[in-house]
Image (tube, rainbow over all chains, first blue to last red; front, side):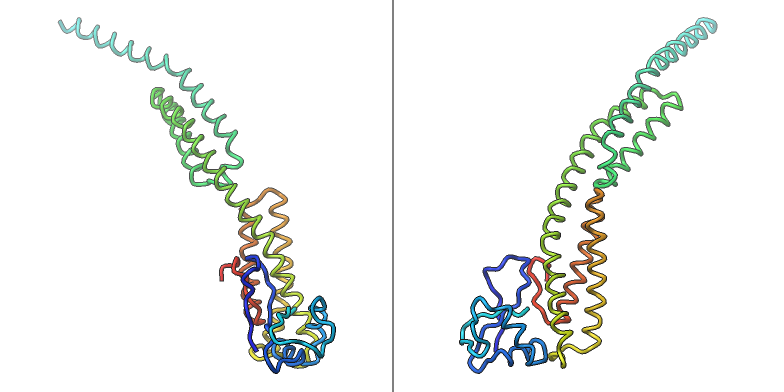
Length: 66
Length: 197
């Protein structure tokens, strides 16, 4: 898993991004940032513009971590 | 011969006194004018260029002291120099005010974003049954209390700005920003590049 800075953001942008890596699930990402895999819904809700199903994320997708 | 010299001396003193007292009214007017010029600039000058304002006040005091000692030429000369000093002072105060206004505009755009992001992260972490690596309960509690401080201090900064105290607003907003950076770091959040970290 890796974090990446969005180079196009404005200089005050506080958005934290996560680039989906092979083996990632929303639960694993939630575990990493929040310590609790059950909080995957927070990430899903913040990325509904690109995610339709919390069980289907794709390598290379860039997810907001609220 | 001695009598003649004495008469010359008396005449000289008389002429000197006449010349000096002849400058009394112009010197008085020059001091009044300089004071009025300074008074017109004083409001912003004391806020944005206090060192230069102090120098002008010292010059005015010096002019008054010369006047009181009867040295009207020096009083007038010093008073006249105040006018150009006030011009410099006004220019410096204007530049500083513009700088502070730009800094405030930048901070008032960015700092609320930082505070909002911290609030959002604290809200999520408060639901977590176990905290992420690198963050313990004490750290999260510190972030919560720090967030309350940020909110209060930001209200203070905004109130300062609205009351015309731009320097105070910028100073407080900078403290909020620095505190926000510390909290974001504790929570493992990215620091905005504009926050200077």
